[in-house]
Image (cartoon, rainbow, N blue to C red; front, top):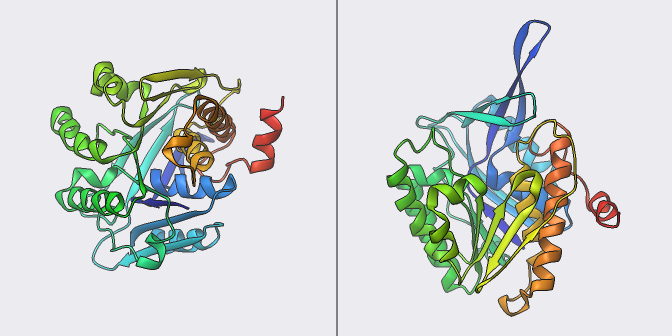
Length: 301
């Protein structure tokens, strides 16, 4: 099972309609997106997170129950509000974020019930929590516990400059968790932030680099390959990287590192590329996820 742990929030996706700027409420949060996508792609998937005791928190708790997750634990904290992300799209469907998260729920994560943790092969840890000392400590302790249990640690960098305004400090925090990870995802822009030489030095990890419409790249034990994607016209790229990464994780879940061959990784990344591309054809990170049958049909074309 892939157990995703971290932020669950509401994406308020803005657009101009009839001379009025309107926001549409969508469930989101990178690790929650991964959990929902992995389940959609046929993997056994679980999620642990936290919401506030408010309207959007109750919306999210109800939304979680409607997903095909093997297990979930979403704590309700009545002392804080649920985190919001305001999203605006340009004419190409590319998004920009503005987070509302002062004293909010996303980094106040609960202890994972042992009956949930025991089921996991891969523990995927979100990054938003790292901007707060409480969240950083939680993430590092979870990574240590996961390693000791003989499970794989997954980490998506998912850098947000409006959360980490001091890039050098942020990179130093991120590197602590990257050191613990077995699988780590970067975007093309994040490779530039961390530097290409640093990313290339992570030879003991499976490094996943999303390249947008160009596909993706994997790096492992000194080997690497660029894997192409399919051509689509994006409507909304929110969550595309999460869908891609969930696709990759769903294909390697339950496999030992000794099975991470060039052939397997090429297949997994091609699968992930199609998942990410198809997810851009509708609004929201989760609502337009393709199902497994649709992904397979595109892979056969």
